[in-house]
Amino acid sequence: MNIIERQMDLQRQLIELQTETWRKLFEQGSASSQRLFDLGSSFAQAPAGGDFAAWGEAQRQAAESLWSGYQEDMRERGEIVRDAITQASTLIRDAYAPATEETVEEAA
Image (tube, rainbow, N blue to C red; front, side, top):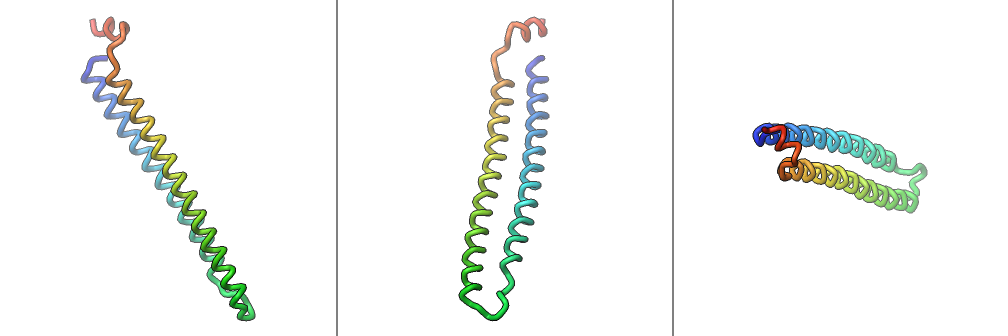
């Protein structure tokens, strides 16, 4: 494969990686938003009987749950981005790798 073909192939692979990464981030973000929304709405109702101590405890638990959900969301997003960076660096490294004997023979 000559240098122009390698560059075009690299661009195609990077665009595919970018598209796949954005798709994963969107899916993860949608699922996370729904999960956090459901969690928040489950704690939104005041307890029956006006027990404000129980309501305050429920709000504290909700805040802790939301915070841990947010942290998990950021961890998942970080892993998606980290994986994409690793794949992109591999693609770029392979595209600019010195020509092997097979590549030189193909060009001849």
